[in-house]
Every structure is written in C-alpha cells, then in structure tokens.
Image (spheres, rainbow, N blue to C red):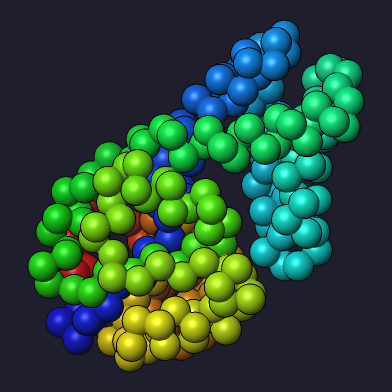
Length: 227
C-alpha cells in the first residue's frame, strides 16, 4: 500500500487497552466510596452494558449524560446493589477523573507506532470525550506520535457518520484516497471509513468472524503486513 500517506487510528480498544484501564479505575472508585461489590461480577455486567450504551450513543439514541448514568444504573440493578442517583453521579464523575491515570496499551502499540511514525502522518479519530482522551494519550506517552486528534465533540458527529471522517481529513490536510483507518469496531471504524470511501483495517483482537474482503489484523504488529 505504497500510496498511503496518512493513517488514522481509533484510540480505545485499538491502541489504549480500555478494559484493563477501566477495571483499574473502577477498583479505585468503588473502594473510595466503600461500595462492597465483587469487582469481577460488577465488570461482568458493566462491560457489555457499556458497549451497548456506546452503540446507542454512536447512533444518537442516548446523550452523553444518559450514557454515563445508564451504564452504571443498569449494572447496579443487575447485581441487586442499591445505590442512590447522587452516588451514581459521583461514581460517574470520579470514574472519568481516574480513568486516564492508567496507561496500559495493547501489546505492540509502541513498537508499531515507532515503525509507522517516520513513514506516515499519524492521526486519531475517536468518539471518546475530549477531556478523557487527551489524558489517556498524554499519560500513556503516545500523544507525541500524532499530528492531529479528531474527536466527536469537535466534529459534531460520531463515527460511523461520514462527516467525522471528512472533518478529520480536512484537519489533517489529508487525501481520502491516500488515507486508511485502523480500529476495533466494524460498525464505527471499518464500515464507517469504507462507506466514506476511505480504506480501513480491522483490529480483530478476539478473532471474530468478519465479512470477506475486510482487511484485518489480530495483533498490532501485523500492520506491517499492509504498511
């Protein structure tokens, strides 16, 4: 793919190990608020609920506030642990505060960024909130690799909406035909980019079955097979 000049990465679940860092944040916040629940059981319910709420958020079916409240409220309801709305709101704020403090990246993230950075212009496109994403990148030491960072708040829309890809390309002064998107979500990252007319690589860490013809990797270092 010698024609590629610009690479756009997703952040969460692609470079930044969201689930590992999220678990550490919840461990701290639940302990701080003396909430006596088993962390593993809490996360067993929270993780799929969080993914469900993010899908709704991507498609404009819930607001940011509804996402932050609903994923916690539903989790506590499922584990039959009674908490007040005030405590849920407090946990939500503290979770967002402490989430960027952990800096675990996926295996191979630094190695592949070191490999790509001298050869390509690297960028981020994320649906995550600006206040959180900036901290994640700074604390994990990867902010230095990227020339531009586009988030959904800046663009006014979220992936897979084609307007966020258009906004990111304009910000990066990049050519659609010479750009590629790399991310973990088929809907938001891969189909979003492809429907916009931009190439894409699926980070398929869990080896899910994907439609024929989709470029995919199971480990970040495998990006070398394409770029």
